[in-house]
Length: 384
Image 1 (cartoon, helix red, strand yellow):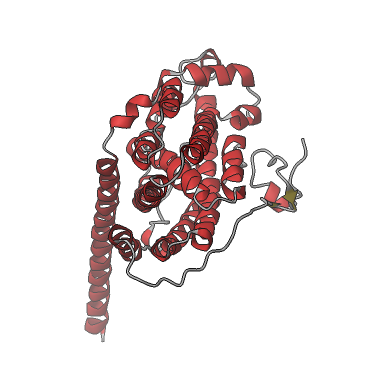
Image 2: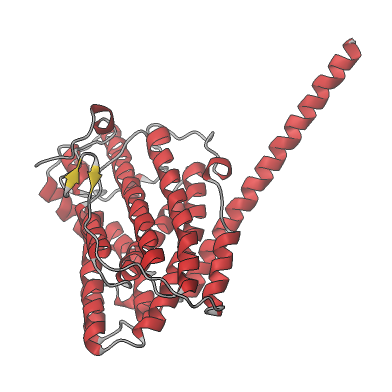
């Protein structure tokens, strides 16, 4: 298998070599098509989208100052996840591992999963930049511009976490890479919305939520809470824009989007098999994939991953019997009845709670530092 032409320093960061994907040096080149669209209509635009744009401006945060990077991660268990959530837990492969090997395996699985979060955020950065360029309406360009900044911040945050705090990286998963390629290379302006805002971001939101609830690592929980609040707005943006568009498309045009959704859903289902980890650890890869597919935890996890995608697909109007059958085949049709607005609101509440907790810590730290300075000043004054 050919690899990217990376320097030894860059290659040392990855647990396995990145696979070739139209590589040029250490970069993956994705051919793109389509048009940049100007508009001369500078009117007010849609109220809900402009409101989302205002929230996007108001909710900006700085990863350098907002995240508590001084927080330590356990080098053995950096992601703070129970071993019971390991994809192989309870399988014959798992039974052959001792406690130390299980913890090392969990460290690799966590690094692999968060590496996919990182690569997905870079994909979101490129897709949101394409939306600014190609979407025809100015109000959508406004909001997409705030998303570009959000995604840059997410890439910055996950890159710092993985490189400086965890010290492990895995290449982009082939299923995620395929969906990113399909999303970025299509000339139709709505496909970056559909591929990124609905499928990739929707799945990421659910995955972030599961990890946020399970992790015992404060730094991981804090990062996920802030990122999720941004992602909830991004999914809402996709819903607003696509619902308006798809109400106007012909049945043949809708069928093309439905096929894209179903293929993307299948890719996202396969994304969490973690073959790269089993390859790196020299496990029996086919046995591991079989174990992951039959794991009760992973079956529940994969089902939860579609908790944002299925109701969103229904909401934007891609809800033909074919799509419903496709989701039923994946075992996730029941997610269609979930209240997506309530889920998104809960994500923002979690971020607000994390922010409030951080503020209390910062205020307490500042008060303690002020008290120490006053004490030192008093000692110096008495000595003089």
